Image 1 (tube, rainbow, N blue to C red):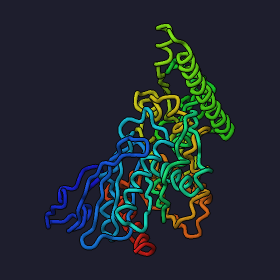
Image 2: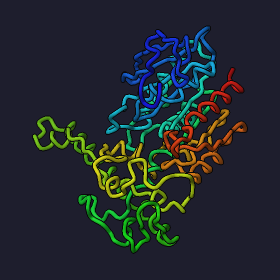
Image 3: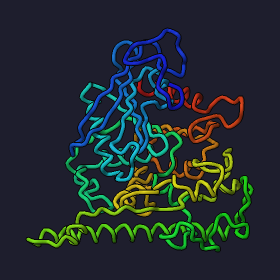
Image 4: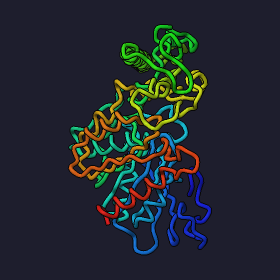
Length: 419
């Protein structure tokens, strides 16, 4: 079960005795299930069990956009004597419509299934964007139903007030950025002068202009005044995109309301009522900290998660929030409107919590992790710093990957508290 690939030794409970410690331990079994959520959607899950009697503790791994069935920490969880549950959200591989309030229905379906199987203790492990999702779940499940979020930022009923949301007993945050909207707020390029022109640049805000402090290879040095202007301009761009998203939603809803009132609507009205617009958000990979390594210093290498060349990663087709519905923008990608921000949700995490920070992370920076740690009111909370990049890979040739150390620390933490 090495990085991103299924175990070569374990399939459907059959084992080879030639055991690699990065695979599931000998005797472990795997069971795949398909569940229905409260709103009728399908979500999948994989349950990994150690040999012997079924344990009382299960550790859940999930990300709102990524496939987690081969997560590198599952062998460590099972090796510690716990069950592991990896769940796929309905939006895996296609986050065009991802709304975090709806994703909570997926989480709840999985946790209800696990409670039904008899697990007494549930620990949530959120890695990267999974941290924001699971912290959001912990926040909402800890509230009385009437106090939960009633509507999404886009205006739809959330259904959370009627949802069975099993509470959880522990939280693990691995390489946690402060939420997908908060992440984008820090890396969106504010020098876009025209949202309809991906190549338009306001020179006074261009992060790649030498006049503003740019040099390649992590040698950029931005003056504090430029950083301050840049950060404020990022907020202003997100606010404009929020306004655009709300306008698009309002226009569609007005057309749908008009359609209901007319007995013989025109084809033009039918088209407007049926149309679901999509936002195209260009240039979303320009966090100054990826270019100027003196800002929020760490062991990270120059560049971002998307690559070393800032021109390729910022101007290319692939990137955060590149294509999304207005509802998805507001719920997931807006650092101003999203509810799935750890700045908002961490205050309700009272369960024992383990935070593992990789010191060479290019998406989760030291100040972000400190803020997350400080916002969590749990009396039992542990913050560990381990050398590695965002995915727990080694930072230098010949060095042990950070994910190995993270796995050992996680196993020790689980044994001490839940076994």
